[in-house]
Image (cartoon, rainbow, N blue to C red):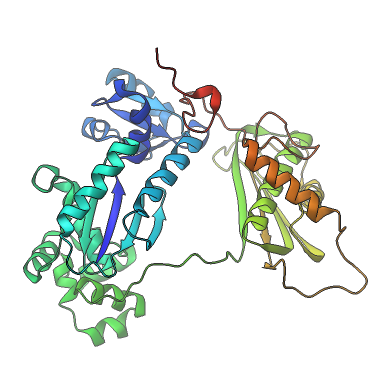
Amino acid sequence: MFALVDCNNFYASCERAFNPNLQGKPIAILSNNDGCVISRSDEAKALGLPMGAPIFKWEEFCKANHIEVFSSNYPLYGDMSSRVMSILTQFTPDVETYSIDEAFVAFKGFDHYNFNDYGTQIRQRILTWTGIPTCVGIAPTKALSKVANKIARKFPKETKGVYVIDTEEKRIKALKWIAVEDVWGIGNGLNKRLKAKGCKTAYDFVQLPDNWVRKSFSITEWKLKKDLEGIPTLKLDEIKTKRAIATTRSFDYTYSDLNYIKERISTFASSCAEKLRKQGSSCHVVYVMLSSDRHKKDVEQHKASKAVNLPSPTDSSLVISHCAVEAVTAIFKPGIKYKRAGVIVMGLVPTNNHQLQLFQSENPKHKPLMQAIDHLNKKYADYKIKLGNQDLKRTWKMRQERLSPRYTTNINDIIKVK
């Protein structure tokens, strides 16, 4: 059996966990630089606040309807997500973190368990230990567990947040209930093609002949169909080494100052280097991107990129940052107001197993230096050790005018009990 554990309105729930005064009130969470709405509580949805709403257009609406608006508090949300995933491993070792607020789990050897009771235990422990409400859908396959989770979310009173598809009757009833466009894995393109074939529900989809699905679509759609039929074909994903690592960000405002942009690029490059070391990889290529604000049609636009091939693979922040800064200096155009930049490291190879150069090699002092920096940053957090050309006060410069305290990751923001 598989289960999908999904946190309800996760970002809003994280805010409520440390501020009980927000319970029952409409909440909206904004994207990077306080741009648009990316998460809403059920109360905000009921008031008609749409997903993706630009906050500058909906400011008055939020004030009129007493909607509490917050900047994205990623340190808090990331830490709370880690706590939820850690609790799940207490129930089964097979956990696939699907996103920041949901995870698939596999129950192997749980043949004689009452899954409704077990799902209730999972939900209750997460709520008690973190304050985050969840819904749990349990079924014989991953795709069906997604359907079961939607039922638990849609009918909280009847299901009490847990729904188990454990009979053929329940499976057919669930597939006839869910619209084909709401099935996990069916996007807009596939939905249009299925609708043209007369498929309105997931049940209509599984009635299609296997040979026709294989011929008309691909093996992925065929596996999804078999999963919905109750035949497990989709397994938990294993953690794989990334083939490329990127750090891209929009600036809080537009900037035409080269020194500011070089500082940002150095920070992005250092972040990529740290991720390389964390997965035990080194890179052959550093790729830098820089672009102006495409939404401002009345100003001159410029978008450029540059790739730097390294003489030998490296995971050193010093080398990668140096190459990235040189690249952005080469593509920078004076007078342009830039809004977005990014660094991508590519051509990844294992750090402890790659082709050595006979006449060229990295400074041997870099490796112990990077190990010391990583150790100190992990111990004291908040990136205390940085390169000399980085801003010592901030890692990500974003406009966060409505930011809540980082209750769990900053000692200065811990709740004080009076």
